[in-house]
Length: 79
Image (cartoon, rainbow, N blue to C red):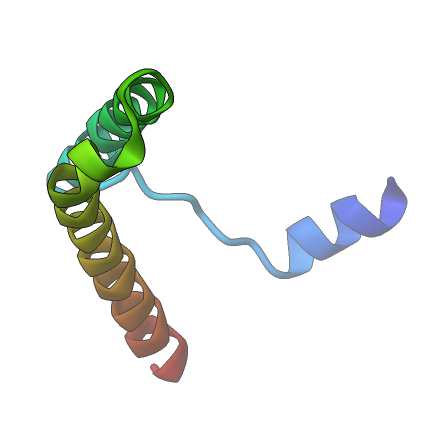
């Protein structure tokens, strides 16, 4: 505990409120996760072949957002 307090005192990192764009992206990812859960349920009921196109599209959208976040994180680390 003392080590945590000492480190917090000597190296304070103030957490900022998430930007509106970050909040928007987070909500979008939550919605995509819900869609993925629904599509998974449908895949079990109807078969995966019928859901290839929507699953592939959703996967592409999620991958795009994750890549953007990784690029932003890399830029912040290089500063």
